[in-house]
Image (tube, rainbow, N blue to C red; front, side, top):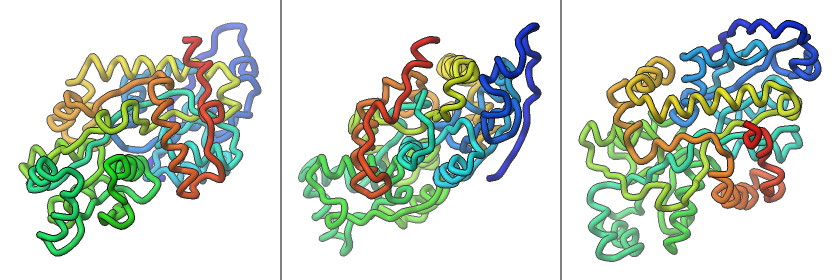
Length: 336
């Protein structure tokens, strides 16, 4: 956990008590009475949170918003298990792990879809064009070692996408290539810059940064080409929040933030720089690229989420393959 800030509670409408506003006062968990604790990460796919914060959209919610910034998804899962978080904006895989552990929560919104890219060394694409998936064997023969991908640790969103794509191409992720787990986008970029890996499955800002710095890597495939509707970051709400007016209020502001991102790239780029640390010029380039598909409607990611649910079960991250009905609560979005 890196940062904690607090936003002033909006004055309630006259005649509406706090118990009515929050369903049951003090029962939302993380931050105490009349407080909703929102966990998020400083990553591109959580951009809606930073827009809501910057544009003061959170003031439209009838609760004190306790902002908890985390460095990774597993820590958010742990915090949710301890009752410390009410709303989590993080990867779809840790969201499924949370649900599988019996923590009362469901996904109420997507944050983004299809945000990943498969990057490969410039010398790989010509091999693929000529030999198809046999290019990995030829690469190994010519370089004396297997093609090495770097991505987030096994079971993460970019890792699942990479393994899914390889399997679709008839390539065994366990034997035909090497997949190295790397923690954090900056570390993936450094591995690329240092020539330590031959390719990566990664989100922005890495693809834009690689292109801007003229490194010998290119976007070989986008997630839209591999898995239309591929899920990434989602918004997960505990049952107590979903049963309160806060759920609708929060999603209304989520929709506003999504619209703001899609209609105001220059202003959004400044928010990215201040909130996530990506230079505004680079952020604006990323926002205009094929990976910046910010959405709120959870149905836009439901098909891809089923694929991820299968992978999560196969990897032992969940005890069973979760169904759509276990993962999603569409009702809140559908009432907006």
